[in-house]
Length: 287
Image 1 (cartoon, one colour):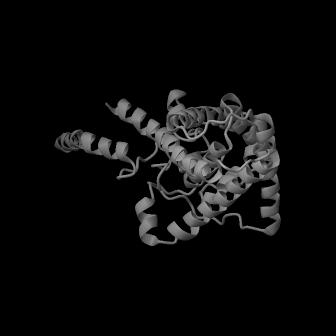
Image 2 (cartoon, helix red, strand yellow):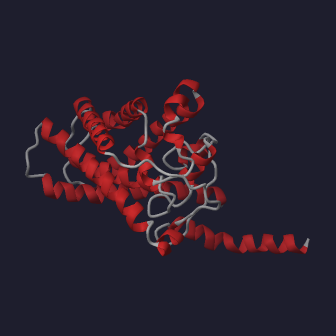
Image 3 (spheres, one colour):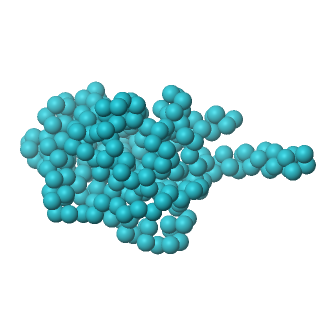
């Protein structure tokens, strides 16, 4: 039963991503389907959507949710708080450099990946996003694990691990070489499945949302645990976006499952397993 709940808990994440992306894709399709985009305007749109969503979601989490004591306490999944430390501050030079890198990566991705027009079919887009997140998670798992097991790649990845504590914008704190490697990794599933610009825009927004949330130390919607907190604290294990591939390859550092309405599997597991947990506690006390 426990294994079944673990499987459902991890696939719930994939379903949330696929459904959220599909809904957002419908909105982008409704806004953009009558507009003709050439290659350059597609690159500009992809870059702009990614950049605006990255900063706006990050600011919402850091300055909105975290500044509210009640919300921060309610959404925290940590068992043991990490040591507080200062995080990278925004500078004009840093923002400009980051946007140049983001634009170049958008240019490379769209120039190499095959374009496929999929329209607004809900089933087709749901299938595309479902495959996209599973394959993207697998590709990220492999590369991220190599960043921690290869001595050469470890040096490249150390910039991201300057922070044992986590904050949303640490998600974008990478060396140039790591940024290039991650961009190439992100290209692989797009190259396999092709892209529709409305799908890419939706993926960019939702991808930024779960990436920023994963580094925020909060359980808001997509990441119902301290999954990535444990990775930053321990420097090993939890190499995937979420725990599915870590469980498959036995590198999972078990996170705290955050139960609630938006995390139904964790709530169902808690309600179902609670009697047995209570019985075990009673037996321990008796003995």
